[in-house]
Image (cartoon, rainbow, N blue to C red):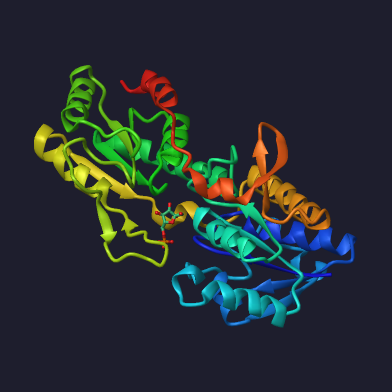
Length: 342
Ligand code: F6P
């Protein structure tokens, strides 16, 4: 048996560890693995390389992804899905493992519905896949953001400034909430709960009046004030999955706070640093477990399924459930976090 493996969408620390696990488990069962380069783009162009246990041996701690990735969407192209099916045959692939977030896995589901043998693996630093408690890359992004906020605290205090730290997460506030709480931010603003600018100004002024010399506000890139019509975009042009590039709400908030409160304010946009460098141990472990389970699904011919984390277990669910719903920060979790907003 020969299978292909690809990763699509934004990279996430831990992807290489997943590929390593897939190749090793496949090797144990005499399954050959072909790496498809640059996500769906590589399948459309039959760009691939054979993988073996020696090639992936040193990958546990490597960030990025040795196969490269892309945001190419075959479903947006005439006959794109059909071409993927044809090219799977041309590459002699009996099955395909697609590692990705909702976009990549949405394509995987379409391919499965068109008759291909497909299994998924969940990854995204945004952690917005409803079927899994955690996806590959999220814990690393949270750790990087937490460490950055911890560091910013010293300069914020030394200069007695307000700091606004913008983190990724697209339409959800998971990274913001986890990192904000972990680093002891004084306010966390997330897309799920539009905020009132007056409350933000009031909080920093109240802290100042209480003798606190600095404040740290963490804002998710997709957060917006109640009155605002649209989000802040870095680029409004949409990608093949219909997403415009978010970014810049932090600097906007910085200027507003300084103008409205008179307090000296700075902002930092953490951006792609959150996806860069080596994965934390949890992501390496998660990626390894998910990769192994993906091969188990292949062996059982459970096509159209994806292994996910529920509690401390890895269990299979249907791929189509992934695309059905986005996982948002629940209101009760945000309410809990408010305990620290002072
Ligand atoms: O989905 C992962 C993510 O890092 C989001 O948090 C962010 O909005 C987006 O990708 C950035 O996209 P790009 O890699 O195209 O700049």
